Image (spheres, helix red, strand yellow):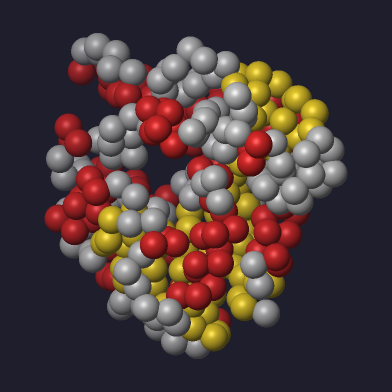
Length: 319
């Protein structure tokens, strides 16, 4: 039986919807089960329906899917690459910190291994990480030497009005209750604080072209698929106003298109699926994937310039 709470649209409460398509776990292959993506007939929010319960959803997140434990400390080449593609995230957030009128502290929700926070800390900012994964928090502490807590934002042991800036990169689309997270962020922000959020943009050209094969839909891990308007409306309901928007991410947009076009070459997907590869084959596939990412920079930049990029990043302040 379907939980009646899952019938209502999480944005507007409307119960009527139309089915768009069916799909399964194309990226990691954690299940053969087929899921449906539906669109609310009133506000047109896209969501997975019915949503899997938490116990089931946890099975679709492979252990350490966000980090390669076999690599230990990142190689110098990998480290330089990751720093480079995170540079535009750092610049965007530093703009938000400056607008807030003070230098930190910054809370990164869903911090993973903490490299982004490490980059901010190296530029003189006070930082704290928060992640649901204990392994992620430990990597942030031990490898990147940034303080990190293992908790959900709505139950984090943090005092109100602590932070000048809170960031959430690719977090909201995974949540049953994104409103709860935005409300919690509002309580933790100072009066002039800034909230920076990035999500895949379901209004992008790639989704129109590839549909359920678009990497940004990520069935079954993405419970809600936001368009830019959906995100702005959500923040408005939670007492925020958007002051800045960005449609291109050097880290995410080209890589997302490359994975859409050749999911079998995605390095993390290959690792998660535990496919046996010789060192030569692994290097060859990695090189092809990297070349494909480079080729995807121009089309994804054009897409973003037309305000239809495959990700949307916003800076918001309290009303």
